[in-house]
Image 1 (cartoon, rainbow, N blue to C red):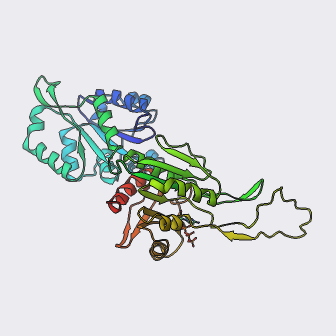
Image 2: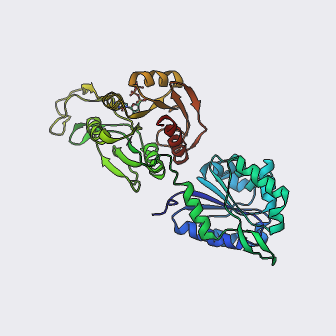
Image 3: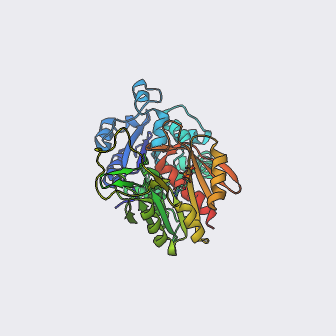
Length: 399
Ligand code: CTP
């Protein structure tokens, strides 16, 4: 399966003759399983119709920065956050100049400025324009700022010239784009990740649990695979499809999760506890379904504390780099610092679960990384993108 499967890709098309090749680019990305949104500049629609790109991407094309209909749906900031990557193809000399200046005067340039995702440019222009010192200086500046230039290719140009300035072929752009989703930050590392809720049985039909969706842990597992790690995901019950290219063990209770972790961590390098483990379980599991006959006005359940999986693993495997999460509703950093010490781990990823739209069950999250060195706030991001950033931060701990 392609690394682009399910990735959110914005294809931004600017006004050059190579725009006709962007149709094939979008088709190839869709074939690879990516979700594609297309942005076109005014110049681009002189070369190719939005209808073509709409048909190929399966989504209406975004053309205007201040379009009330679009802003009511997926507005420009939301679109910038949605993207796992933005590929500007073709990228004209003028777009390069505007990006180098940090302008935000149309949708394409605003998205490139507003996104946290990687921005890749596929320059396409006449060879003299590419070789011009102004374009070369812009290219240099954009690379220094972290944008990636794909190409240009050398060869015959639409204007009859021969030289550098041809846009890379769509198939090559797809291969290059796949590369950004396969870093080598964790090449050869063995990683164990817990995810989802646990279920603590009351009787054969009832249990105690919580609202964890598992999305953060699954996104981390996927990002760890993409970073080259050998991943063992130990998951409580979720509705999520199992990520590809990893080992997954499904468990129910906290005690099952602990014993699966103890087995999996024997030869692991990194342990990430993202599961929302039930802190308590019923003292006894009734063998038969508990009937309400007999109980007059109420029913009480005796609970006992579950083992702390993260603290146990950190104590049992002192050479493992252990990372935990902290779901808090107040005093985020102070509580996370206390957990860091109490559980003896290298990092706590703290998030405020009282904030609407982030944390439990949502697609976005905003976290603060707490280590012995201090606290670092990360921007609000889709969990898939945040996971990739977290992998890079944890890789720094694991050196
Ligand atoms: N954790 C764990 N086992 C538990 C409880 C928590 O492994 N029995 C892990 C979680 O996966 C998370 C971290 O510990 O990485 C912190 O979880 P959290 O629920 O925020 O903290 P608790 O330790 O349960 O403390 P409290 O509920 O008092 O905030």
